[in-house]
Length: 504
Picture 1 (cartoon, rainbow, N blue to C red):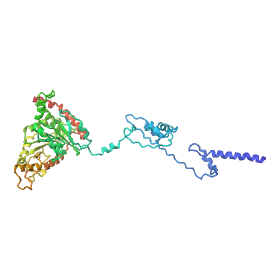
Picture 2: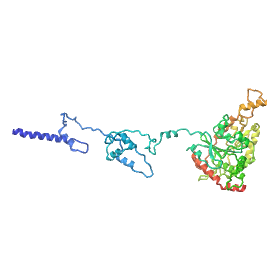
Picture 3: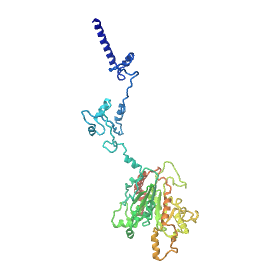
Picture 4: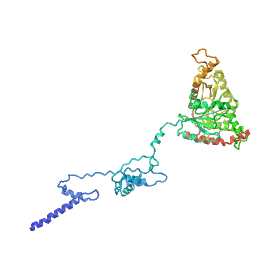
């Protein structure tokens, strides 16, 4: 009994030592450093079911945490002066205690719930994740810097096509901002303006150069032409300056007629009040025309002077006066001179094209054409405007038998015949009894067709050199602001005010 009694406590003591040894099993790293070293002395451990652990170190699964480290979260939450940070998009949400569903917590806070912030402060990983897909830019929790996919696709679309012209300067000579929405931040543009007397066909020419063809109905032109009623009344169709830009980024500016008698008649008969700096109505009309011409000479690459008969001396005197009163172009810091030795490098001058519209058959005669070039060259001899050397009818194969040096001093002169359809012309001949000799062949006109000549003119105008309008390269939007500043400077010009005082 005594031996068994002494052995009993030893057995119980040995069992206690095993339990203590089992309690010293290695825990998480960093908590129990003595466990693995003590277990190494006794070999493999025994499990409660009698099996032994496999030899070798224990492999633990690395937890995957779908959250940013606390350091980055603190940096993101810290406010930065002058910048607006986006809200973080939470992809995981815990299920709240008390049996509430995650959908209920969504309604309380669409972007992040209070349970998520609490668990993040405690450094724990949220359980039972609920994955969400948020439509950025559409919901109430959209961030300010998020880009809408629809807007991103819109930026890749081609520029919007204008259906008709809009006002750049209204009839009251006030600047309009409606053209700004059609302009872009790109520099490859060409600006073409037109001036001319009343009824010469300025709007028709600009429509044919920009977006229309001679076969279309004139009521569908982008620049409205004179209707038959306005022609019978002797009125004018255009007022102010009209704006149109093509998808090829060519800006066309159609203007009201210069020195227009219909505008003067409308001003007198409707008792419109004159600005205080003008005393007489005809002085005000002439100064309006000079303001428009001086404005075009500053902001356009090409200016087309349209006339329907050759030639008016007063028109050339008007062009030289507008050139004298045009505002000075901002120059670069360094001194530059042009190739001709004049101040062409510091002062900008556009290309000037004389367009003889509604030309008759005899004006296409080579001898008459040479005389017309000589007259224009003599009248514009003292002008700095680029009125020669950039457009040629001889390059269009209109006069195939003429040599290049036939015209001598060739100016920028182009001839267009009267616009009429072939069907109307055939009916006119049939009604007058003058049928052509061979009915199957077209009648002799003395010049190519109107549509072919317009096409050749358009190709030469669009091929004009695009010199810098100022000392910096302008985008389309910068050109708009530059043109608005020039127009305001033209209206307040001291030189124009002094000239109007001398007229009155």
